[in-house]
Length: 399
Ligand SMILES: *Cc1c(COP(=O)(O)O)cnc(C)c1O
Image 1 (cartoon, rainbow, N blue to C red):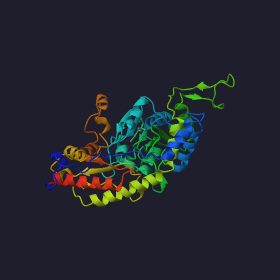
Image 2: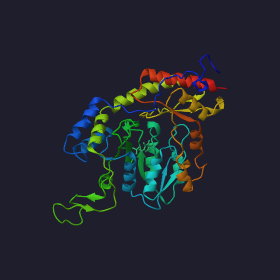
Image 3: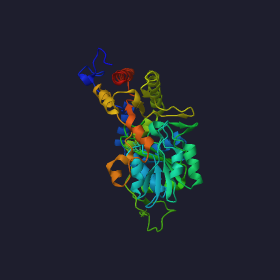
Image 4: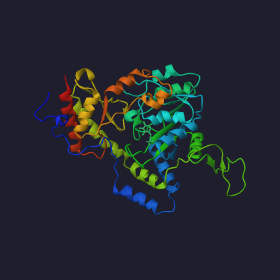
């Protein structure tokens, strides 16, 4: 039904004059000062602040070790290397993720195998994982989608029984809690991303946390060309200048000034999540009255870090398609997005031979989801604008 205020889509006034992004970083003056301090110091890269940041992050998630990388993607690559994933191996992951989760498997010459999702949580379905295991299966990469932890107990115990390694993609989930445990020490290795849209940022950056010393040492060498100076590991020793490259690594180092930003942001993570949580409650309250929308899953035993707020449209109650609703929200100047296009839909993956139809629940989810703005720097007015715009658009398209 069309009310007095015609929709922006029909040339009316949009709900907002300026556009609201779906996510945005929060940088304070003290964050900036920490970066400036490093720029004036002796070390611009791999200095004392990298170690300080790694220690701080490991402590925050209750893991023994943390290794910082130049991006979350580089960190995932490192984890796949440390896990010994190689050509001929299969690694099971979810299609509802950013391409990087699966790309990291390809970097090691192995094959991603996509397991369908659970239709309530949108996370990888442990039963689907079990049905896809073969003699080639080496590892599982579950993703804590939107910050909602995957079914980690079931995935990790299944992995232990079958000698598989679990690399948790927690790009969305810094600060999330799974059954009273912080995400970051539950799986063999856990990856966090520090991209500006994520819950804290270092510009670009990523971290692997682990309790396993062997993985830790491999990760350190992998991010710096496969070179070691560790005396106990050297095969030869020509003198005090000596170092050895023992395998093919990369330059995946984070700079010290990025680590300074990351460390400063880490002090604010709980505050950021509280703000996200507050807005989520307001969204939930508003959208519980909108029968055409399915709200995100909320677990009673886990605490999401609320990286994203994804609404699912009930197509049977709407006249418009997801595309029409999406475009109408854009015209209201609401920054919307879709997380995610199933990874194997991408032409590159299609070229590798993945067929549409392999994960029907993920594909059906993809048809109906829209991510609406959620970030700590939003104002209450921003939140109200989003709710007003969603109500306006949904009532326009409702049957
Ligand atoms: C952001 C993201 C990554 C990659 O992290 P970068 O730091 O951008 O390289 C991987 N997986 C998921 C689910 C992500 O959202």
